[in-house]
Image (cartoon, rainbow, N blue to C red; front, side, top):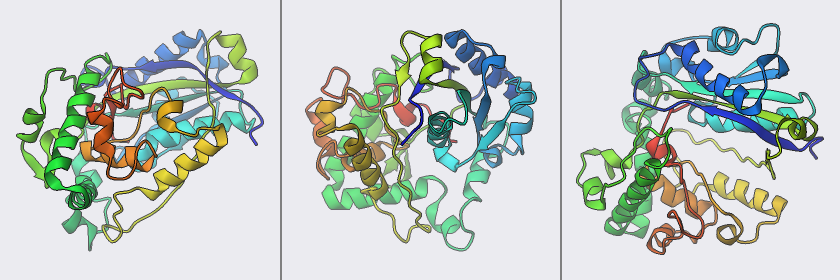
Length: 339
């Protein structure tokens, strides 16, 4: 059992773009950190520790926590912890921030995630992360496993219907992003025909089925219940956290139905008393680096039966104004700082 309740008391986020050439890395991070501190009416001296997340080798840099933690965040003579778990760095940061407070180690922590990819060889860095014998020649980079997932999904539930559903996801999320001032790709007037006529990247993934490469930073301040009540009258409380992990070597076991998502979601639903997620939750933000991934994730998370992800769109459930909007921010499909 956690020793403390955990709340978010401040947040700062930069505008995300394909390239932030107007700032260097510390300057970009400082934008988000300053906004978070101002939001919580705190100064850096009030923070106990810093958790910082970034995938160095995607950008051709090294030990970024040593110079960003001090130069950009001002963490002189204080604990700094680096988190780097590939494309899941953002979620790993959020979970780590929670446990650092819930465990009683710290009272207030600053959690900062950032990516600035255009100055390095991100594509090369990602491709060479794969096993050189099997994965590199067969998976075609980061999109390879996602294309395999989409092919499995399509072969099971029908290619034409699945393609239309995936295109509907793009229309929904890029339209949602148009209402998010921080989002990268804001495309309020696109159509399914526009998506389905875009360039094929890795069958069945077309250009607009795929997420962009985005640059920006986000900073979040976590606090325990005692500190949170001093800082704000309206903290955002954590109800619970749950994780499940799995490893697959290359494409020997690509599973479109994401068993870890199902296991983790069932654990958290039980922990906080959720019987029907669509009825009991107001909104969901889920990971969808491709449009097809949102179909698979909504099914794995129990929002509908397997193979029925399309119904959430057809019935308007996952759209803005629906019973449970999914990715109202525009999601990863619209803003993707990768790590």
